[in-house]
Length: 310
Image (cartoon, rainbow, N blue to C red):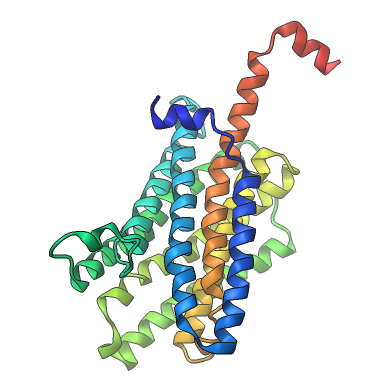
């Protein structure tokens, strides 16, 4: 049985991902409190390297596999088929980026490349840079294209109504975030060009693209709210949540770069990235749950279905 067949019969649900996330964040809160009181970085590294990376890999693999399953269930003539093709490619890029950036660049026993001859610190930096590009700008471009096509389809169907005051406030916040990113890049080159490293510069396109995704998230949020609390609203609500969380984490990092906040004050965002990964994994999981539910209902005999409806 191939992996996709195994996942078709699996019982992975949104509740499973949320349960794992809650446990991870609860442990993280204890680790963070211990680190703040003792300044012992060993337990911090143990948490992020030995436990955090597997969690990111788990969420990334679930996101990629479920996105592939969802895309395979769309036909070419369905309006959202092309949108999910881009979302699937973005999910695969995200998973590859996690492997390269968080696993292959890690100087720990969990990194399989550590046991290969010739692996050096430069090798790990190379994989980190490649992972930053694949899991950053490339992933966000593909995801942005998929979400744009989704919003366009929903607008044609009249499922995205006029934005309310709260949506307009969020739009203003997304535009402000774009200004923060652009000003940050300009100031970095102008004031301290010697501090501009390749590793840091590779994150900038992702930050700017994230600000554009934030605009799309506002429309997705409104569409999700208008649909009630079904599978469809959960799908796009999960994407919107992941984008908002990622934007907030990025904003905190920029405020630290401006010197407005210290790295200790923004250290809590380290743990929010697990929420980002979980939110992006939940979206295709909810879509796959919706597909499976529809398939089960269609597989019922017509008379049984009629009895259940009555």
